[in-house]
Length: 235
Image 1 (cartoon, rainbow, N blue to C red):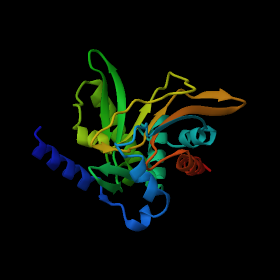
Image 2: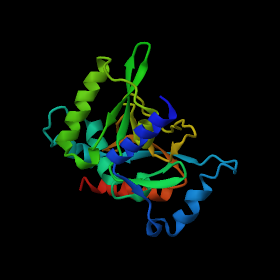
Image 3: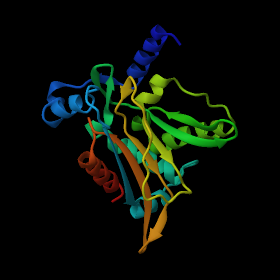
Image 4: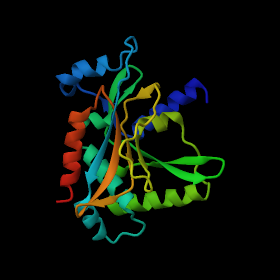
């Protein structure tokens, strides 16, 4: 794809994901410093923060068991609630495109899926999740997952991949720490998450959650707020 076609594809993606410029009022304060400092290529730095939490999902799992929705899994249940929660947290909707900071009000989710064989992985693109009901999202996820396992999902354009929030699932790995790789790119600063294998401890249900955060717009402070609001959704 030549540069003109890539730019056209990028603009179409941004329109679909309801991108808008970050306002001066939204940037005022900490972001006025951090957005520039942690994306300054003239400074030798690693701007990413990796954190792994052991998330108490006892109430979330109880709420999931009460839902009777075709195709719904616990992972897709958590995925939908995470997408809804991020809507209320500016830092997780910020992307730096070229030299401009944008807010994606309807950012997509990318979910890696292990399909085995010579390709090993493919990625699902879940769009409009923040504007869908749980049942609508569960249906979209199931259809794409089934297509991926039949080898029918093609690799998406880099511009699409890099605007999305990346959320993976490792249901057989009860990890206590996970650092996710990433690379510098034209589009950056999207958050990345990985859920792990759920387990019981002291009568409660936990799940590992690894987060890779770009320090320009997210950090442990805002992650704490996101997790607080995420768990509050379950009562």
